[in-house]
Length: 331
Image (cartoon, rainbow, N blue to C red; front, side):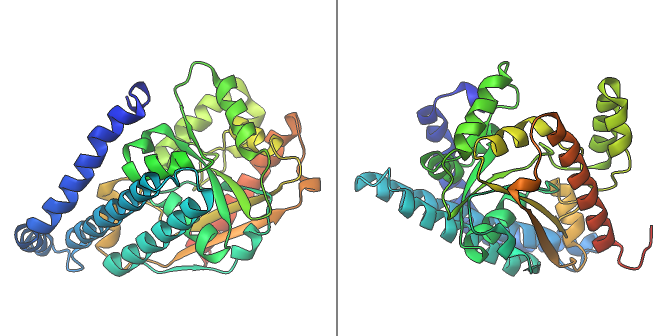
């Protein structure tokens, strides 16, 4: 697994693979473009979702390559530790990828709540529904709220060379979800949020994985084995997964001055697999809506009461998502 190899070994694999993918997507474009279009038409997918997804992959590969090239340039000029320059690179990366996503897929994104993310210090607890959640939140945080994020991300994302190189130069933590010592991971989260500045926000996805009906049912069953009251409290969730409180609590504990922001969105539902993305893009996609609600730190309990508070926030967010998805009150 990714966590068992050194950074040098990992990058000697992922960076050449990225470059190869970028080159092949250009060189083979005369072959894959008509083939993908023909496949879509034969299957009755007139919006050409396969073409759109491959077009985004082409943009992604070259934007990633550009990010790695700039990061390499910063290293060669002795600016590996220049946090400000790397935050600017992150802002460019998120904005460029979001632009490419909108252009190739036809997705539109809106939010009226970016102001809830600033000023810092703050901790964002965000819904996790798709493969694009990190990109969406990074774009809203950096381009709209003009903040610099500190992310909690799963270690598997180190397979992305730009995230790996730039992400490890910025104050982020790549979480080992299979770690035998969870205490060490939680201590790392406390250190991550400690010292958050006025222009910074720490970000975590409390569900721990992308949401689906099967995962939600399984999570509730596991909770019921340990805590029937909590299972009953979260049993009505229709869209979100039950939150895992330990990581969120550690991140909040690390910065006693930080407000907490609850974030949720709609429009990425069902985009948790590549098959789901193709099905979604086969039809005119609904607009992506990002929403956030800021909770003053004085209203956020600590200790055992934090779990109950987080559950209540998640139930409220689940209801908000349901209302956005079913504005006419349809089931």
